[in-house]
Image 1: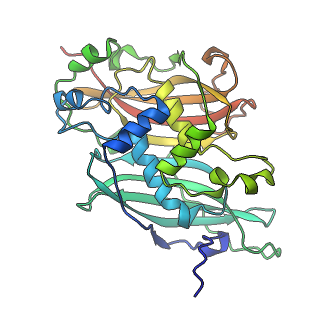
Image 2: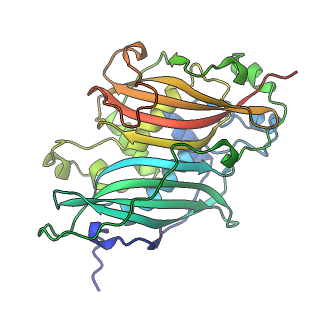
Image 3: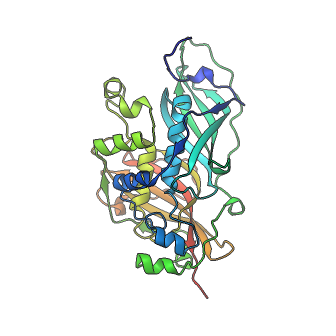
Length: 354
């Protein structure tokens, strides 16, 4: 039996197949610090244990996107080592906080496969789920990825029905931590904007921009143990149409989320990732800016509400004010070439106290 780990190609995936991803990962405070160093995150909930305890949690949970990216990285050897590109996400729910010392294990189920017309690749739909050391699910999501075929002999593979995916996670399916004393948050952040202060359709231009360094995106991919060749192998990528290594899309999401802190300072973490697409590649040296639009507001039970947000990230555009928002209700808008990310997600945020 060969010990050459060449990864799975499109032909290797079958609907109903369950893949158990190797090497569980224990997250620690070092992971949190490195994530902050790579993204500049200022999340009030995730960067100070005192804030988290005051809100009723036992300690500061790990960043939601740190967890997401670590879980994603676990799936790469079996799902996307031979990927052309990761195409999108849907129906992602953060089911409970992950704390320092928790150990994550990941499995994925193949939902559907669809060969591309060029006969050289196909799209694989999977649902990945992460559990902690107690066997409790902490994160679940669907993604679809374009994967190279092993043989391009023109023989078409049998297509399977693409799964029906929700346009967004319904508020009734959101899992919200039991936050208490939420009025504490505004004193920590210095800003008073709470759930009632955000209006559907409101546009928030985030003032900061961030340049992606070669070292940063390489370290980020290593932090998440994402072994995809497109992010690491400069020799291989020099011969590709891109001509150079791609910045891992999850790192782009994390950077835009960190930039989106300005104007959304009192958010208490991501509850769902409704959908998203990497519209165009990002390379070392590109400078990211982003704008966020409030898509909807949900009056949840208790002391918090939720905001459904759409963040558009663009590269080398100067300021967020130059980014055009897509027309509402258009599922697959045509973006200008500078747009790199279209992310639809839901966050928790305190309500005003009576």
